[in-house]
Length: 232
Image (cartoon, rainbow, N blue to C red):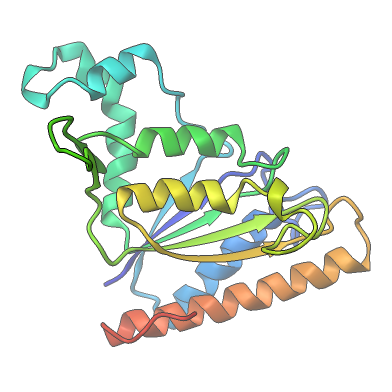
């Protein structure tokens, strides 16, 4: 059985295909998960809505607790790390992470950044040893996980080599954080033209939906094949 971790980070509560002011990324992530479930109905889906129920941001107590060896932690430290532990457990359980992450002011929503800060965790998802010459950090997440980033943008031209590529800090920042902990297979799909609200937006959304469905089916087939190559 394959486990999906379905994350939504939009502050908008509904899907744009069901609610007037709904979220495009919720729409894309739902379409991906629906297509996967049609192909593999017995697989498990873990749901985590950080847009509507954001994790607590990292605090000084969190940092103190995280960098204290487990055997030396005081009782309060377990409480400080409890939410982070749950989020890390979900990540480690998942084979495929499907993240609906809209662009807010050229980067990820604060709610999603709080989730990233909770799962990039010393001793759990990355290791650190200052005595190791030249390589004090190393990833700890088991190999074989896949990340799917489903995004939306108000303007257009944020793709690689396009006019606003240098201002897109969504996919690049997510890829960097996940590579750091050991997840390097990443797929990206985005809808654009949201602020124009015209035929270009509708065409971009339809294309992104179709691509999300195709990717879900391809990855589901690869999962069923147990070793078949993943979709490009």
